[in-house]
Length: 226
Image 1 (cartoon, helix red, strand yellow):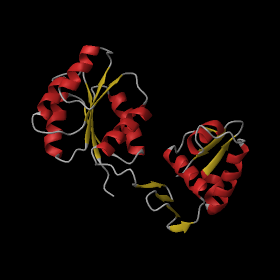
Image 2 (cartoon, one colour):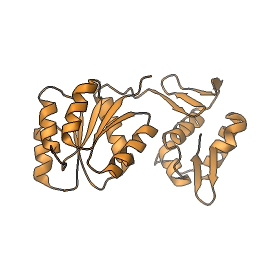
Image 3 (tube, helix red, strand yellow):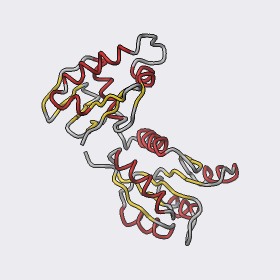
Image 4 (spheres, one colour):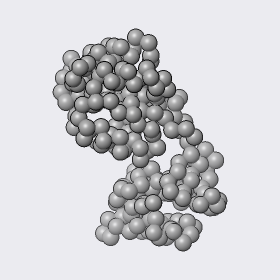
């Protein structure tokens, strides 16, 4: 599936890199602009940008003017970033047709989650997309898993557990967090349930299983895939 293209506009190179890195990990293509004028030029050059992450305070042309220029001819989703927690700014943003308004500093993971939610809402991102992570391929709609192209039979909870690991690849996950997200908050079972499922999952993933699902001693687990 072709990756959706996100335009990230911010005059701070470190901020652009931070956002870009998290978006690339989530399988998006990223285009960057350091100021408003370049952002407008890129938007009209590229034609197929799925969403814009737009800083407010920038040289040459600020985020508000960029938003006005783009909104004059396009309904592309726009997320505004600002260092000011100002209600008037937020109201202006929504008047101009901004889809989301996020104050700095923010969590890049939350930003990616907001982007994905907007793209699902605008039917650009299918919530049943195939997830890929290294040799792992998960088809959520068909409830199927392939490792190196070979189908793997998993129980319902094993499937949910692997999906959760893939969605949070590279992140150390506590047993409590895994229980809350895979078994839901109303589950009062012993955390050893997770250990049992992880052991089975590793076995079904084959020789790479133990290398992919790392044990974080005294805490939980982390999925690491090349």
